[in-house]
Structure formats: C-alpha cells, structure tokens
Amino acid sequence: MGAESNAGRILIFTGCGKGKTTAALGAALRAAGHQMRVLIIQFIKERCTGEHEALERLHDLIEVRRRGTGFLPENDEEGMEKARAAARAALQEAAEELSAGQYGMVVLDESLYAIERGLLDAGAVREAICARAQGVHVVLTGRGHCEELAELADTITEMKCVKHAFQSGRAATKGIEF
Ligand code: ATP
Ligand code: MG
Image (cartoon, rainbow, N blue to C red; front, top):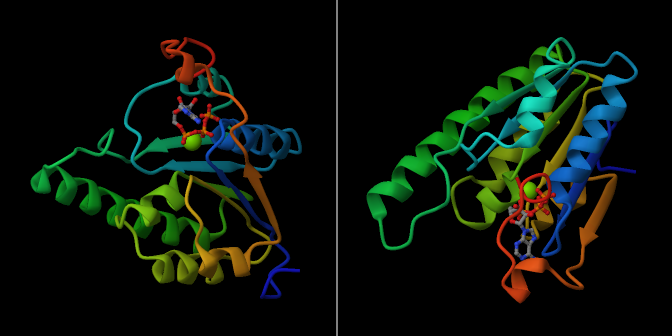
C-alpha cells in the first residue's frame, strides 16, 4: 500500500524501455470506459502526436494538455529556463486540478523525466499528489528513478529496453513513436 490513506492509486511507469506513455494512455482509456474523467498533463512535450488526434474523439472524458516547450536543448541556458518555467507552471496547474477533484484520474506524463532533468522538484510533486482530492488516481511516467515518489506509489512498472528500433537506425515511425 502507498504511504497514505487516500483511496486513489498512484501508478508509476518508468525505465528506459519504450511503453511508458502508451501504458499511461491505456490506463486513461480504461478509466474513461468507466465514465471517469481523465486529465493528462504532459510535461516537456509540445508536439501533437497520434494520441492527441484520437483522444479528441473522447474529449468529454479525456482531456490532454501539452505544457512543455519540446525537446530539452543542449547548451542553451535560456531554453532550459523556459522549459523549467513551463514545467513549474504545469505542476501548479496539476496541483490545482488534483486538489479540485474534478478528474477521477490525473496523468502527469514525463513528470519523472522532468524531475530527473531538474525541471521539477520531487518534493513539490509529492506535495501536489498528497494534497489530491479523495479517490483521485495518479499516473506518473518518465525515465528516471525518484525515491521520494517511489515510496508513495502503489504500483511501479519499470520498462526494460530489450531492443529498440532506434538502435538499428530506424526513424521514428508514425503510429508507433508519434
Ligand atoms: P512511448 O511514448 O512510445 O510509450 P515512452 O513513453 O516509454 O514511449 P519516452 O522516454 O517518453 O518513452 O520517449 C519519447 C520518445 O522516444 C517516444 O517516441 C518513444 O517511442 C521513444 N523511445 C522510447 N524508448 C526508447 C529507447 N529505448 N530508445 C530510443 N527511443 C525510445
Ligand atoms: Mg513517454
């Protein structure tokens, strides 16, 4: 059991293998099938991908908010500061929605990667999750281990990369990677 009494579950999909975001989308779909409203807040990401188009059709049940600035830049402090500001604002937004309890499930996509890259403070994420309304399920994704959030989680799945098409030079493919 997680380290708190809120009946809402906390799930983590992490690791270096492919499948974290797709697993979270699957969880969202399952919840929506029970008429639960789902909010997906995406950290770092800004691009529209296949799931955004598809989820438009379920807009009454699943809402996606892309709150990132895109791929994190190398050697660009200004770009990183923009990414940090966007991540902090998105966390604030997530905290408000988590405590308001209008959504039965809140997915914080790439939040663990945002923590790993120093865009978000793990303690602030933990605080937002712990202050959520009763019964709200939370799904966190992203590569990078965060002990503070791992302690809190009920279920953690680590995707292990056995093979990835990128390694053999295959380009990102429509319907698979985006
Ligand atoms: P997906 O969105 O396909 O479920 P993910 O959420 O597990 O992947 P991210 O770390 O969010 O993976 O990766 C972002 C992008 O990089 C996605 O297009 C994903 O398919 C791709 N990717 C995932 N794992 C790997 C890997 N081991 N090597 C290269 N690219 C990867
Ligand atoms: Mg992902």
